[in-house]
Image (spheres, rainbow over the protein chains, first blue to last red):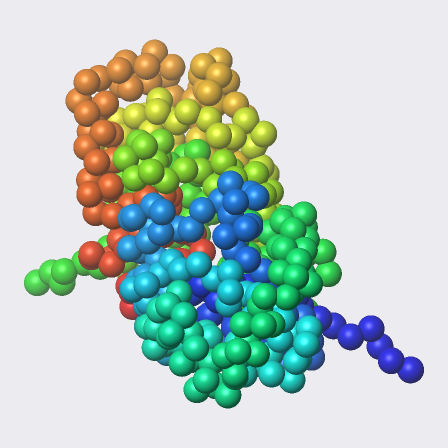
Length: 199
Length: 199
């Protein structure tokens, strides 16, 4: 007999520093709650376009506060975090990569997420530059030509669009967003509500 | 010999439900930290205009999430909170009232804040309606004619503008915002950072 397994859906975009912090914290939290993580790579730019929301950095004073705030959370969590001066970047290729690997090579998905999040939010790399992206992928053991072929597949492109549209339809307006069943929580600063929902 | 007293500045607007939650929690937190609260009534609409920020409810999906989120915080805090269907309202007169009482009748400031916050976030009153405002003030022991005279004083109007401009100059973009010295925290969900800063 199997019980219905507990799970939390994690909608994220690599370009969101709060998604990075959530990514660092969620596995331990989910394990503690006996819950599985359902990884939902989405395109935050598409979410913004569909909902009328915008990056916090479009309000300069909010962007300045947010940097300090993220540093305080990183310190509280004991997680390294270095702001990326190239932020915000276009994450379309990166999110297609996550979508593609999740579908075609699920065993490589974690290594890819780790390499991309680390490059953006610890190593200050400009992953919008194809040469930097190639080098980052190569370091993590990914073949650049394979990667380009993967992110060019129409099915992968369509799947990322579908996930993003599903997110919007379910009420997502930013990243990271978590669902426990139909209960939605927005922001890495709501992880304790996520834990409450899982317990 | 006197020590330099610890204090936290609390920039707020009655029209902000997160300011209401902070208002409910801050006194106990400040007392626990041995800190004084410096009340800084400001005009949130003026802050939005100056910074390019906007109410979260301007993004409908964010507004829907925010209502659920505020209820979860209220429940965690054990604070009654009822959403106000008249939200957002123009709080200019209300904030002038807070500014005026703080200056001219500081002994009545707390009763006024309590009556206005309660009317807006527990009693669902439309304080944008002058008759409802008069009735609310009367219940709390304020004379309507005195109040109108107070909020019409040029010095009071100018003082609210000055506080709002000071807030913006110091980096405020929303409400509630707290300062412990020059360290700024935004949001009722950052009260534990405020407590850390005070300890």
